[in-house]
Every structure is written in C-alpha cells, then in structure tokens.
Image 1 (cartoon, rainbow, N blue to C red):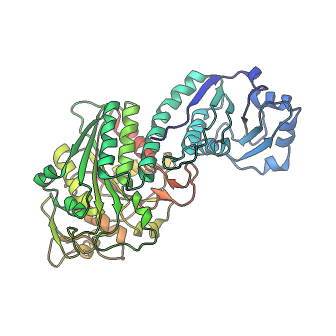
Image 2: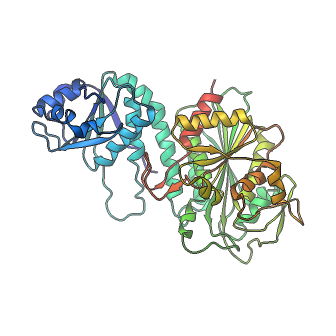
Image 3: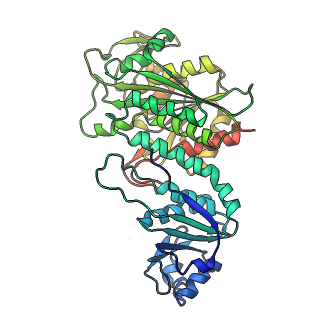
Length: 489
C-alpha cells in the first residue's frame, strides 16, 4: 500500500533556519505581514523576502498560491516557497496551500515555518494528500521524497489535531491504490484478501463465497460474474465503536473489478479505464480503514459486492431474466448495466441482515452522470431529506463536490419490463436517474437511503487540488465527516 509521507511537528527553532537544507516555506498574509519565522528568513536573505512582499507580483497572488525564491543568499536551502495564506484562511485554502507545497517537493527536505497559524494541521494534511504517487508497477527507482517538518508554536496541539487527518490520508491512499490497480492484479480474490488484512486494525471482516451467495439467493449479483474465471464474492467489514444497541450505518459498494460490458461489450477505446469500476467498493474500504485507524465511536458496516463482468459462453445475455434476493424479477436489457444488479442484491442483503439506521451506496454506475455533472460533482439521490442534507453538508465541509439529483414515480415507467417486474436499463434518457430509481426498489420502506453515482469523480484525467491525475479517493473525507457529525455521540 502507498504510505502517506511522514510529517513531523516541532517547536519553532529560529536558529535552525539558516542551516536547513532543501526547501523552506513561509506563510505570508495578504497584507504582507511577516511572522517570526518569515522575519528570520527575511533577515538571513538580507531583505529579499520583504522586497518580494512589497512587489506587484505578491499583490497579485491568490490565496494558497506560491512563488518560489530560488537559491536565496544567506540560507543553505535551495529555495524559499512564499505561500500567500491569511490567518483566517479557509480549510480548503489551507489544504490547497499544503498541496501546492507537495507538488514542489521532489527529493528535497521541506521545512514549513507555520508559527502560530491556526490552520497548520490542514496545511500538513493537504501536503500529505497531494504527495501521493502510485509507482507499484514502474521498474524505475521511484523518487523518494525528503523529510517534512512543520515548525509551529504549539507542536503537541497541532499534532493532536493532525492525528485524525493522518488516518484519513491513509484511508484515501488505500482507496486510490485500489482504484489505480490493474484488473490482472486486483482480482476479486486479491481485493477480498486486501480487505481481510484489515482485521489487524480491529475490523471484523467476513468473506462470503459463491456457494453461500447462491444459498442466500443473491442471483442478480452472481449473474453478473458468471462469465468470469474470477469468483464473485461479498465482503462484509464491521466496525463496532459505538454502543452495543446502536444500529449501524451501512455503506454498500459496487466492486466490479473489470467491466467489459459483458455480451453488450463496450467499445475498445477507453475500455482500459474500466479497471476503476470497483471505485464504490474502494471508497467503502477506505472509509472503513479510516474509522478503524481513528477508533471512531460509531457502528458502521461496509458491504461490497466483488465481481468481474466478462463475455463468455457462460455469461448472462441480453433478454435473460434473473430473480433478485428480494424476490423481484429483473429483465436484463443490457449486460453493461451490471452495477445495479450487484447493488440490488447487496443492498437487500445488508438491510435484511443488519437492520441499519441508514444506507449509503456508492458506485461508478453511469456515464450519464458524467454528461450531467462532469467531473466536479458526484450525483446524489436520496429518499430522506434530512439524511441527504447531512451528507451534502459533510461533502461541502470537506470540499468534495456533490449535487442532489431528482427521483420520482414518473421515472418508474421507464424501467417497467414487459416480461419481468423491472428491467435493468431504460436507455440514454435520464440514464443516471433511472439507475437510481432501479436501486430504490431494493431499499426497504422506512430506511433512510442515499445513492452516490461517482462515475465522474472516482478517477480523473487531470489533477485536482489535492490529487494527481488518476484515482482521487473522492468520498472518504465526506463519509468520515458524516459519521463523525451524525453517528458519533
């Protein structure tokens, strides 16, 4: 697993500034006011920092923007990174500032002179998130980043604030690694094994194999994977940190480790990206890891359906009819609309077994949500306004884009089947909505439910503020915040 960079917090030692190697970062507010650390850098560089903060270039800087003064006289450091950041900076700006510093690090050591800045822990968190790289399959020696030290006025307080964020960073990295892995490595067996290994963190992990899934009646899920050599599985992860009588929050993830589309095969162009079709299960896994690492005081169960959708002589066909665990029959119009078949059974199984206080499912479910919202927001569907509002608040607080989409009975007629109770595809019109409407049929009456269509945000082709190009780990921060705000007492 990729490991977040180790960040040390130490008491400010101005005498150590002159001899610090690598890169030194200083924080300067919009007025150009220098704190003690910046003043020491300014004195050692014979006023170079003050000359810059008095310039038009500094005046034009935006919050969290950085300008580098290279090879400054009077310092052993190779560069001084001047970060424009007010003391009342937002959490988002502080994290973005840290991320911008991480992008510049390379092999160098980094010394951040954060002084008494109230957002020092967030700056460090942004640094950790952006310092991610996935080099598991490169033969070249990876770039080993230097040490990172944050000098602050109260290091123990800052380290305590950063502790839960370190758990979050590890959860995000776990999710990103899973999404970035190729399908010949991350098979259903391998995926299940990585989840089982989290038992050492205190999670209770159970792997349900095909024979038991058949006995339980998860026929819709099994139909998706029947054309693959990789066995279908359901993995249950439980974190019991709350009261014994507290009903758990349930997180349900789609884990299609590779999606060819099945018999309704996808075009060749871009199919290599379908290694990320297990993104929903990866987010669930990352959240469960985070909760275990920070010892969350809540009961949460994560349940993921792991399958591979392949074309084969045994694969399900368009026109097949399968019976779900719930008992509803489903006409398979398009074998590439497979994620909702997986989720239908896993949703019903989870509710039947755990009687959760609420259910949130995550899936890279439809291309239609990318058409609707692009890569800035996940699609959010819900049957409970309060539950949904709490999630949207958590997502906004963590800077993870999410936008509520409509549900309604008028969409039901689009998924009505001539031969079965329901069909799995209604075509292009309202494609993400009809997929959510399909899933809602497998949510028990009275159960608060949220469906997150993360097809546009799980993996991106350009870097984001806190992640390089590729897997983002979207959802780990928001769901952890939701657990903390709504379920931890």
